[in-house]
Amino acid sequence: MKPVWIVDDDRSIRWVLEKTLTREGIPFKSFASASEAISQLEQGVEPPQVLMSDIRMPGQSGLELLQEVKTRFPSVPVIIMTAYSDLESAVAAFQGGAFEYLPKPFDVDQAVELIRRAIDESMHQSGAMEEEGLVPEILGQAPAMQEVFRAIGRLALSHATVLITGESGSGKELVARALHRHSPRSDKPFIAINTAAIPKDLLESELFGHERGAFTGAQAQRRGRFEQAESGTLFLDEIGDMPSELQTRLLRVLSDGHFYRVGGHSPIKANVRVIAATHQNLESRVKEGLFREDLFHRLNVIRIRLPSLRERREDIPLLTRHFLQKSARELGVETKRLSEAALKYLQGLDFQGNVRQLENLCHWLTVMAPGQQVEVGDLPGELRESVPVSLATDWESALEGEVDRLLVRGVPDVHGVLAQTFERILISRALAHTGGRRIEAAQALGIGRNTITRKIADLGIDGGKEAATE
Figure 1 (tube, rainbow, N blue to C red):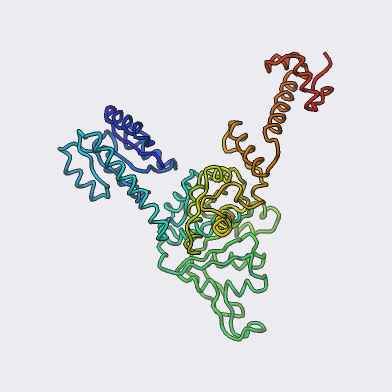
Figure 2: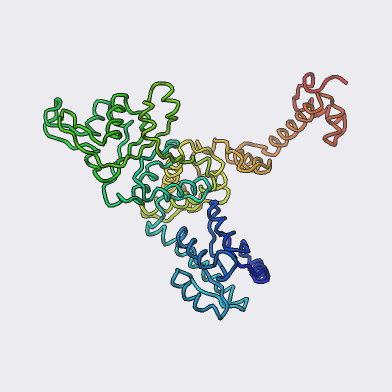
């Protein structure tokens, strides 16, 4: 469960609520002002399970905080704390979407009951959104994804051309659709085309259409994607693979707003917003002469970089839960859930296929995992053979991941294997640090000279190179 946020400039109120929530085993965070809480949200910190806020505070008020939270996270219940003299403000709070108000001075048991009701409401709303398919169009709470959300918000009223970059499977088309959905063109068509998936000879006709008789087989006039997207948005995926001759035609459309159908002689005006995407480094392709520099600058008006899943590992639990529920709905079965060990294991994987790979994995688990709770051993074999990266800088987390990997593979004598590896690394690094001098290495490690000599021999450490004769 996410923490309950307490926002109040009165230190005694914060102290009482902190002690109460600690006693009840409910996680929390405290803030002395609304501006502190809003700053946390702007930095992409995970939103609270429930927000409790006073109304009247120095600086920004609780009502302003309420509005900010409801705008960003409408499903978060907000409890407004107020003195009896502030009941008019409480009415305003309800009108702003507050879950409930808590009069001051309040009874501690009453506060706990209200907080638990709000937590239940939060859990229910979250589950209902998943079950009904009312999930956000793009999921992500990592700071890198919050930057993407902010960019989409800033572009809400813009008609500007956008270039989306990111690895394959990271969700570039979802961002393009979100840009369209939040734009002034939202009631017009959104047309998507993958320029790398269509043969070079057909791509021109796909984009610009053709006249009857323009080429063999053209028995009727055909409207291309630019015409189909009229007044709306045209999404050009994998733009980096577009053939050079078509790059020239696209540049002309972006420059003067007109194009010709294949075999046509009359210019057609294009009122289309172009959003392009690529997994390639267009700057490098420009230098290599594979992509027109002038077209690159036409497309690169505003750029949104979509992070890989490796850069937003904290989103893996959220995405996994969503994809497992989605697959369960599609197949008409009960939703699988991952154990803590399995979830931690997934968070350590590289996921070269990004979110698409994770979604495919969740579908596989829904079909193939034997029980309702998915353990590490239930993951596909190729993933169990992968070596998870450490999610933290401390060696204990890395060791936990390695233990899980060896246990899953059924390696015998895991303790012996890891103990030897640990001692080998320990002694080798100590010898390297002392320039191969065994006595100094032994003293640094807190072991005897005879012990380190024996270990060097037992563990197969090259004493001739790593431990000079003393």
